[in-house]
Length: 294
View 1: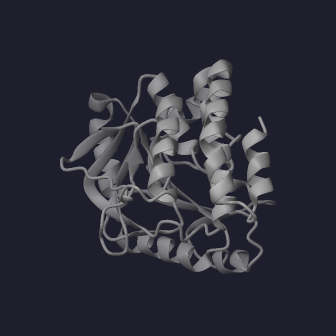
View 2 (view 1 turned 90 degrees about the vertical axis):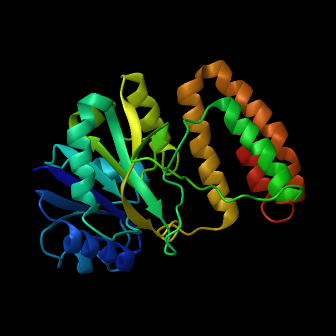
């Protein structure tokens, strides 16, 4: 088996089915399997996907989140390479084969640890495909700047876009929406860290791959449509807290105890004005508890 494609579904049966259909429609010239993990959706997804031929269906007993569900699928994977693919993605061509060929042909020369393709939205505009590895310093800087951009509106809010003009670009980490890795290498860094529920687990993968001397790349040899956010919709405050909890875990694992403590103190000072101005009377106590819980 050359590639195992792992997809996680949670209450998005139609999006997931569209993703699977696009894989089957366009993927050829390669030995692959599709492994679908359902995060205990409880919405009839099980009945839908058990009827689909040529996929391995795994039913989780609870909502495991992103990384742990992918780890569950990985246990059944037979491919030498693994492609973690979001359920809200759609292939437009034989992207899996192109990705596989590039990985295999350049793995040793480039020291590839992980590989992703450029992602586009439904309007074919480039969107977030990768990023620099977060650090405690640049995360605090980003939050400080974001305070003035979004809450005081003193600067234009420029949409983040990843643009790669050449065929290949080295990045800090590849987003988990379309992440290809060699199975044995991924297992050597202990897969997705189970401490994360969602967000930042892909950044930690990039960090750990670099620690073992591997590099992370985006390849412009093909594009995949990512209907970003449609597979996971939640209220703004709930999502903010979820993202920040994952960010705290990431910083704790990459900055040490003192660095983490200092980060949390400064982060709390930066975000108290947001607590007062933005969440007052609409979840302020909930966000306050989140800020001070170490």
